[in-house]
Image (cartoon, rainbow, N blue to C red; front, side):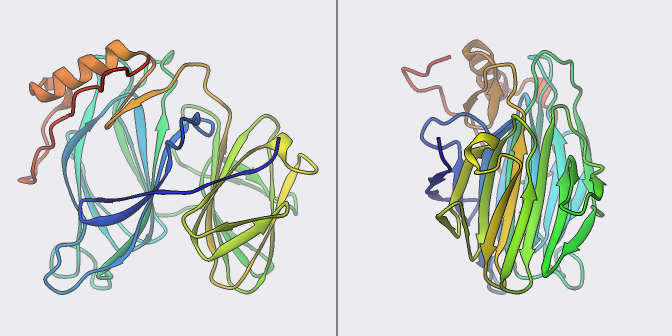
Length: 312
């Protein structure tokens, strides 16, 4: 096998251009990472409200938001109101099973609408979902992480967004981010033209999203909004991958151990069986209390029915 390169599906969500890399062509999640969007980059005029995503539900997953630029207000059915800004992570956990679920809204904020005095009139954001292991009883929760482990290797800056990581100098970094399966996420920014070496864990699956610029590795080039997907065995020495890039290039490096359970996805729901997704659609569209209420006047988004032939 070898490294695969995936093109994005392009769409508009909440008024923002989206490059969707996962799910892609029926491929399985990367570890437990089952969904990957790059929202933006987009600039907003003075009369533009920016991103506006109305109230919607989630099941059996965590939403993982990594902000590159701009600010977004998160509100959820647990009562959390949290603005996320550059180089911060929000993790919302929907819980596992048919008795659990969560709903939330997301909207851009600016200095005059609840953001900081330096909030940009634009957005660039990596939005991921993490499928939860359904053999664990996991409760709903929300966590905000304003500070994360950061270090430099030569002219490359790295931020550990989740998991633990040992760099090429043998230094060990631990992110505070809540996890229910073994994962890693690293933001990598090239301050000058150069190289970066990322160490790999045995039996992990990996992906590299290029959010700005392009990178070269293992004889292939990954351009902006493309995704490299690989297993540790797809890399020449199995233990690390070398990336070459120009100044200003930025990537999101993700990896993890595959889950033991099946991961099915439809709309904003994840489950390990079709019946549970069908029930979640019914529950959401009928206002079931499992999804709670959100303190917001934003539009409530209805769940579409499962397409005929959906396999589970």
